[in-house]
Image (cartoon, rainbow, N blue to C red; front, side, top):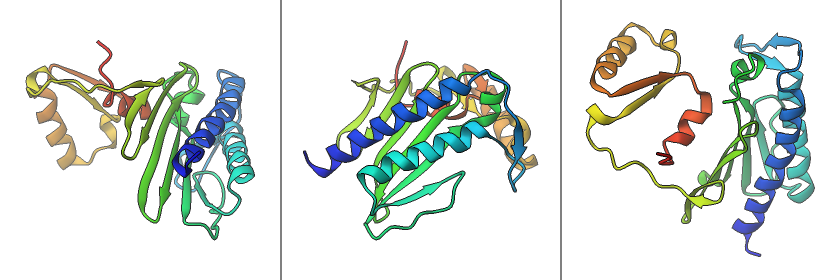
Length: 196
């Protein structure tokens, strides 16, 4: 097994572990606290990242791990794992199943593997350098829409934009066929798949 395949195997194993924990806590009563940047965090965020770190460390103890909830672990190896245990904690705590777990594996600033895992919907996107991207194991096919008037716009919450950005968003909104807000990392996954 080559190195990329070994890394990919551990990505899947890590996401299996994180998904089990996310499903256990989803739509359960959880205490929500605020991080320094005032974004919400739960015990689920912390447990998922701890479990992810444990799986990675079992296979690659020499690699660096950078996570949203824990201290950076700088290793001697040239590979770095970057983790976001719950992208979309607001969705998670409000019972919306579009939150996901994100993983990036890089080597010396070169991105090798990226993953979006939506555990409640059992949907997973994996991108591998030189091999393209898959959705639940099948190759991704992007839309062939080239006309902005036929496009769908996905955006974060409009109230997160400053005045200048909001004005540009409003102009873009009026040009597209359909617009949707929120969606967290799920919207990024939809960029990589044609599902209709």
